[in-house]
Image 1 (spheres, helix red, strand yellow):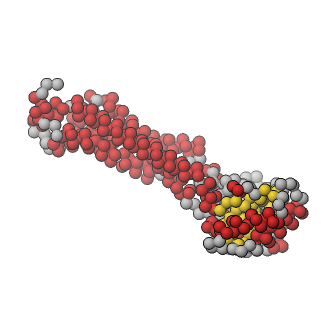
Image 2 (image 1 turned 180 degrees about the vertical axis):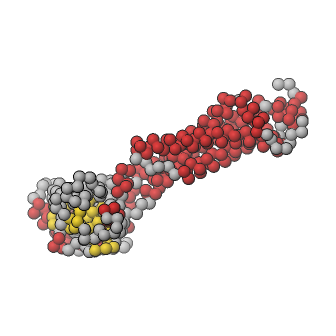
Image 3 (image 1 turned 30 degrees about the vertical axis):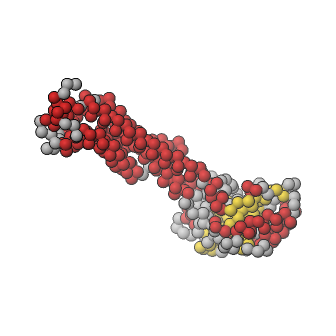
Length: 409
């Protein structure tokens, strides 16, 4: 015999407090779980974002000078350092640069298409490098050409000089010139001096991984300059030679000049760099996962506890229904339907709350908009969880004997 919805709704009106509590708990759980799962997906996607470089074979050495050198002396010393590093066994190539992908921060530059334009079209990361830059990092050139040796000039820390030519990433080229005509075009970097795009590379991730920078994540400029003075030496080892290169590189630099500071935490391979760069993302994903599990467990426990309490209160009523001919299946169906109605009310409220919570985070924390797929998946998950949680108390209720109808309360 199919149970009618009307008697169930009448029974729920007599137990409004418990029904409302479970519905609100379901709503809150749905809202938090949907957004938490969305955050986890965003963080996991962030963790696996490609850098565009040969991470497996790269080593970064942070070189600082113990005493200030003149620009000419620093340039001469850096040239000697790079010659020594490139001659090491197992070293494929080496450069000096101002930064590297996933560093956590660095130089970015407003870009316009005309010198008098006041609104920037892009805010790309700026990398300084010579003609060895692309080969050292393993970056793929897809259009145009690499820098020529005669185009490379030294630049001191905090010196603001615009180069006549530049190489850009495809992402930046497409943003600046959506029609695909970036090669050979001039751009302006907060200067009246034009910079001509002579090359386009496939992928080169920016230094910053902050949420605000994600819209510019692959928009990068490469300028034909070597940063002298304090700089990062980036070495590309031959496959399988990274450990040996790591040991020899620092010794080679100190052999060139001991008036430098290279700390142990200033010598990093990309396994370490990626781990440090994404440590907060990994931690956030784990935290959100724990929150989801805890909330789901609390919600399931609440449903089990409340349904068990209702079964205990209704034993005489259940016994009467059994005596009047209700089967075990009827009793089981009654409690499953009752819980489903509460769950539906909860997920409807929770879906609205989940979207509202996401809109608030979008406006305050530059989060991405929540996909409705996560809301629908959360609704299905919470309804299935509710039905699973109520199953054990409902089975106990279905086993109540008709004899309960004759017992005094």
